[in-house]
Length: 279
Image (cartoon, rainbow, N blue to C red; front, side):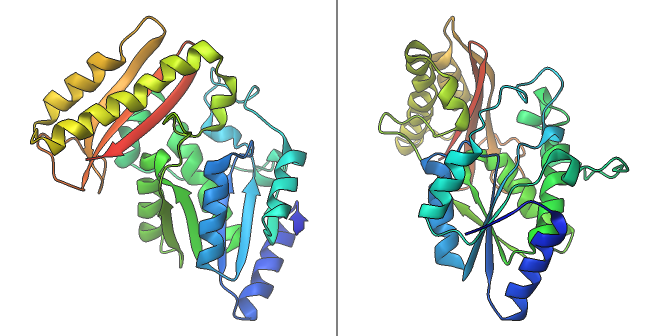
């Protein structure tokens, strides 16, 4: 496994792979790897000849009052895991390497990013779109592998690839959950035992929505009301519960089977979690 720290070295390594006809699959991460990330790496290994993973906590997707400084970091542990998995390249740039002093360009999506998490985090997807544009230009992958847990991000990246004409195919892997159903997230490490009990209400509520649709409920107002009602507690505060189209994250009033996403964001005390389910 080769650890790469500079843009020039990563681009050169990717060009050499492509010149020899090898396909590259790329998994972007912010480190603090868990089984969800590892499932993305396994998907990448099935998709291409060469697997590249980035570890970079991107400062531009955090607002000043968010948890950039406290975001979990353990690069040495992450590198050991990726080496055991047989990853070919790990790109670990510094913030200065990705955003030099003369950096003045950003990428802003004008529609999909303005709903769901984009309402309470208005600068978040600008940072995501910008860093992913940079990473696609640096790693030059044939496949970009992301997870369904971050569904809004996945839809934005699909549109980014299509609108900006990147020669890259997006691969979206299923959400990975713990045995108790909690969607895996690096932020789960911050949860105390009692906070985790509260967090489990998120997935339990989403399952209720799915069960209702399987029994014939198609009105999304009803589904939203049921999920919201089951989630509310003193320590679990709902940010949003939405029923949206998988195509562009727009609100919908009636369920379209297999194309409707029930998406949730909530605070568990001071920890922000998201989850979703397709109905």
